[in-house]
Length: 217
Image 1 (cartoon, rainbow, N blue to C red):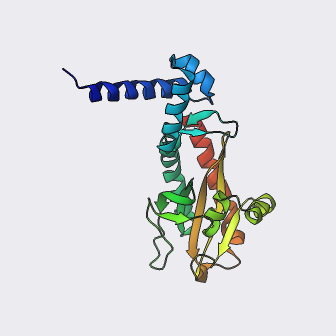
Image 2 (tube, rainbow, N blue to C red):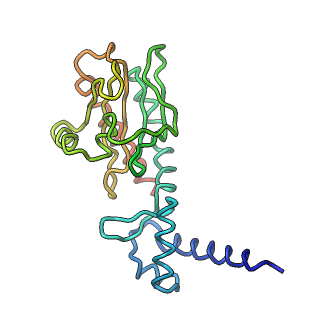
Image 3 (cartoon, rainbow, N blue to C red):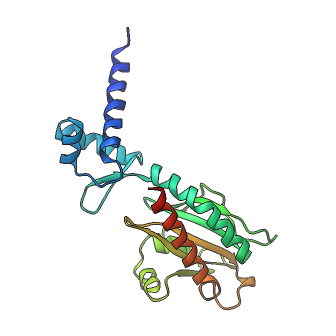
């Protein structure tokens, strides 16, 4: 006979699956989750908040629930890798895709430069916000947002690591900024600045990734 603990775990999994099905691809309030799943409002709300903690759901500015980073990340990785490789091959520099996780940024995908002297961090690397151009962008720093509004990109010149620079552009979907494309390079190979040299290419790469993510969802 199944144990009480097992039965309880199964009920929790069934409820979590029902909440995921109820959310689908739309933003859903706690009361709507309760209606769609048949759970009480307090139970639906409590489970949804727990699923936010584990990245299965996330909360919007209106406190509704959407699918979380664990699902968005997969779409971003699938959409990002071919675009980053093309950006790397075109520029010769390391192209990366970063997302925000609490007070850090996490590298999802990296297409490393083939130069012996290069700027690189492996996927899974974590850096505190707002370090670097993508860190400034994902942290929504006031100066970074002003730079973004003016140029379409955010750059960093030796701020995080002396001798290295980067330029980043946002991946925007209908959910807002979901990631940042970053091109990182030794400053010895920069003629003007990271942004002036490569900004437009990075902006176009970010737009292509956003379009691919939207098609997947």
